[in-house]
Length: 359
Image (cartoon, rainbow, N blue to C red; front, side, top):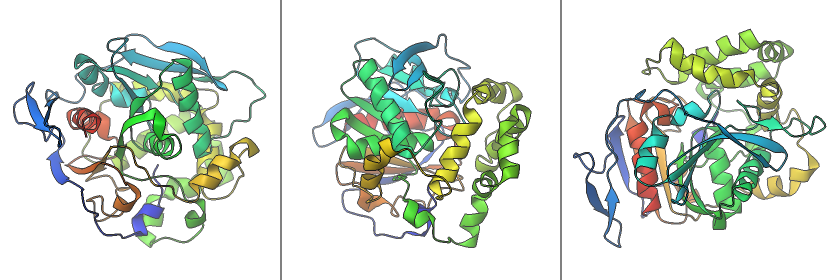
């Protein structure tokens, strides 16, 4: 999940930020579904996303595949082939179904929406058994760059949460020419490994219990057992999304993604790498060196904070990471919503994508 560095940093809210509080099922743009509102300095008309209840859609009709970099990536695609592209990036312990309602909302408004399984998840597979099953942050970002190249996508709106936010942040920071706009849940979450080496407040350390568990042989065995990890991940859902009343079928659809043969290796590596227990591959060192400097993000950005997410950095208004974003910017706090923001509040998330695209 998110970088604990963000909890202890306190910086002032910069100028040019729009901070609003939204309920989980409201778009915050207009009270009338299906209308347009004037937005931005250019006075352009921005569509209002219709309100829908979470769980309106239950699955994606087809899963496509493309060879990209070191992976064969499985992905869902909705919307017109030549529409502006939105890449929706999921987190842990989740999968593409976090966007099962968001994707059709955006597709209906003319966007080409692509939702890939990250490495180690779902139908995404490594092309070679010899490729190390590593998962440093830059490796995952480069997977998405490779996906864009394979699909001949020059530029896209990137939108994500958890691992997906981090991946989108990295691409926006290192390859801004590939990013039209950014929606980043929990703001700036590029991992600072040096900061991770320092103790945090007790409450923060408590939130990260699973990270320390994964650092143990006991936690490793739990993740390597398919039945145990599926039960484990469900428990995490209940902790980080306390108001989300998901049913067995909803969880089961996502849990299929956890049966990937590389799932345990990828998850364990990612969390162990963050706290310095394992080293990344040398091929990614040059990217990680740049990311260690916490590079700014200058693309048009909307950040989202889920009010009930225990990983939302205090005070929950985006001020703790505001200074990292140097371009057009707005912030929204989504009330009564937990960690899996796009699946819990699809209308609010989809509206943020539309609005970011018009910043």
